[in-house]
Length: 180
Image 1 (spheres, rainbow, N blue to C red):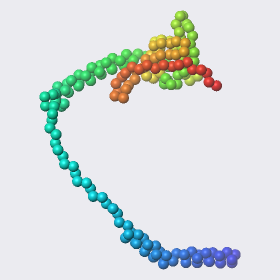
Image 2 (cartoon, rainbow, N blue to C red; image 1 turned 90 degrees about the vertical axis):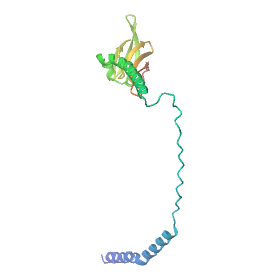
Image 3 (cartoon, rainbow, N blue to C red; image 1 turned 60 degrees about the vertical axis):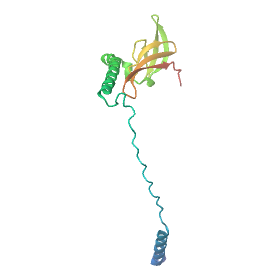
Image 4 (cartoon, helix red, strand yellow; image 1 turned 180 degrees about the vertical axis):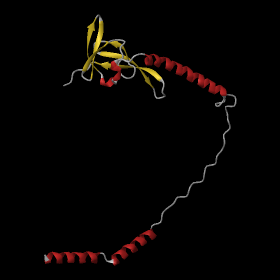
């Protein structure tokens, strides 16, 4: 026990000797020398360029901020909005079908059959099979089935483009082979 106490006392003495203020003074001297030797380089700011105004060369043409130009743009926008509303209005007024609750990428075509002379496709959604035919709706983008054959289903979807306009696009589902 006495040896442990002696070892601790010796260790404390060595640590205190290591914290000598002379080594701290050397460090402070070195830091101030380095600070005095280092000089930042600052580049001068370039002179501003001289502005030369340009004359308006389209004096005879339609002024870009005139009322005539504004009315013309508003007519074009309202005509486009009317066609977009006509595209989506019937879709909003009808009753939704059950398969419209699922995104198209979660629907898989797994087969087809002939019923009363009409091709009917079999689709799988959440491990349930459904029969769909031309005229049924599929997917969350107002997708109406336009064609069903033995290996694919073609749809017409109504989606919004980047500008927020409603447009038609085509999509298709291909027959999926069973994976284990």
